[in-house]
Amino acid sequence: MIPKIDSDTGILSYTTGYPGCGGIIRTRPGDFAVSEVLDKKTISSLSDEGFAVYRLKKSGIDTNHALERIFKKSGVHLKALGLKDAAAQTEQFVCSMGKNKFLPNYSDEKISLEKIGFAKKPLSAKDMVGNHFVIKITGATGDISSFSEQDKILNFYGYQRFGSKRPVTHLVGKALIQKRFGDAVSLILSYTSEYDSEENTKIRKMMSDISKYSEALQLVPKQMDLEIILLREMIAHANPQKALYKLPLSIRRLFVDAYQSYLFNLTLSKSYEYGEELFAPQQDDVCYDKNAKLGKYEMISHQNIAIPLIGYSYFKKTRFDYHISKILAEQEISPKNFYIKEMQEVSSEGGFRTARMVCTDYIAKKDTASFTLQRGSFATIIMREIMKPSDPLRSGF
Image 1: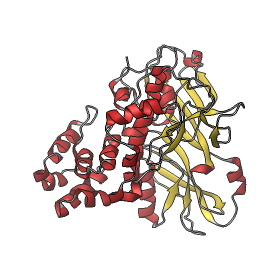
Image 2: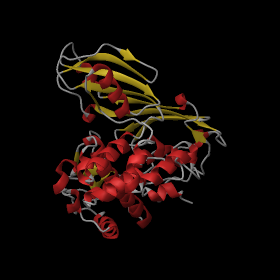
Image 3: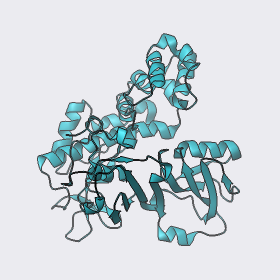
């Protein structure tokens, strides 16, 4: 049986025959550790001047809020190569936005920042080749060392992309591309989940009533920073589109990305169910080579099938268009919807994503798995195949 949260986020299949060991992850802060892996050329090119590069270690706080905290303390904006959530012990790289501007090393109860050098130009996601994970399972029913199908896992987007305990980000994204700005605001404020606290659920039900926005604003906890922004703007102007503009651009883009991710998960699921070959490229497939370069299939090793990410420049000429066309019809959208004239800065051209996970350095002993994944892949998708949880969110996902 596929859990509800899986089907809600477009994940409709398992792809390995391992029966699952059950258990829970993230019972303690150090049980889920992730560290970014920088390209060796990038590391060797660091010098004594340019744009400052830092190693950011954190726990109990997500990347966006960690960088916001640093900005409030120092007035310096830092850019992250990738986003890491709060429910992990993480180590990542961040870069200054201005040349020859740098901070002294900094630490508090949740984060530490250490300067490691300078780059000639600001680092980007392309400088990161992947992430290394060490994950411990508490209460597993057996030794997980017998799991050996790490090369047969589809590259689904994980629960974090959709909001985890409150899987609403893709729903907001769909509302945005359909220009239903009022619905987008309503979803952010009042969408409820069975996994949310009783107090939060009560506040969200209050926020479903426009006439109670002022009352709700007095009760909303400071952690609901997006909700606070929207409430204030809606009280002041009653204009959903204007209120959404007050949200950080990265957050608005994240909503659209989440809906793209949902469509990708559905495409991968439907293609797998249909019997498409997803682990070995075929003639005329679009593929990534070992250097992450995109092109047509050639009879060489280390190629990974690339499946379209829907955007306004959607590439139809793949064997996956049959499945994508059906999904788009069911969703009542078209690729053109991803060009949003009223909010052009969140429009998305689309692109491609690999069909299967590239997992290296895989080691599993007793209750702990360690492995390295390419940039953009989710460790929780591998753990989902190992654990086969009946309720992923209550199992720490």
